Amino acid sequence: MRTKEECQEMLKECIEKREFWRDKVWEWEKKQLEYPHQLDDYEGQRNSWSQRVKTLEYVLGIKDYI
Image (cartoon, rainbow, N blue to C red; front, side, top):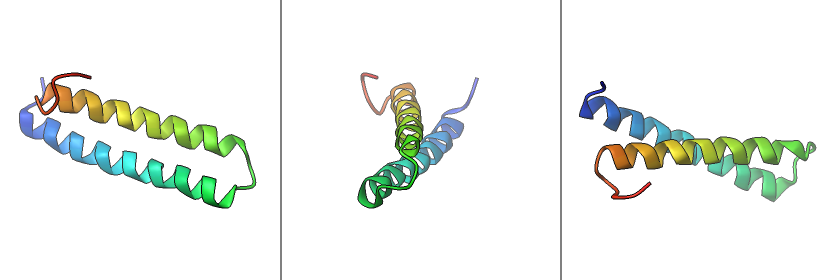
């Protein structure tokens, strides 16, 4: 079982990664990159990290719902 401190550190890392992928999606939409499948990959990564953030916020009691 992870400690509260470990979960908070994981949350911080997940938020950073979620923001990275959010920016990648925004960049793709702005520049319309060469490969259209990149948007699907970027959105998938962003959604995955967003779900991890929501789960950790719930586990840490920051949010009452997932």
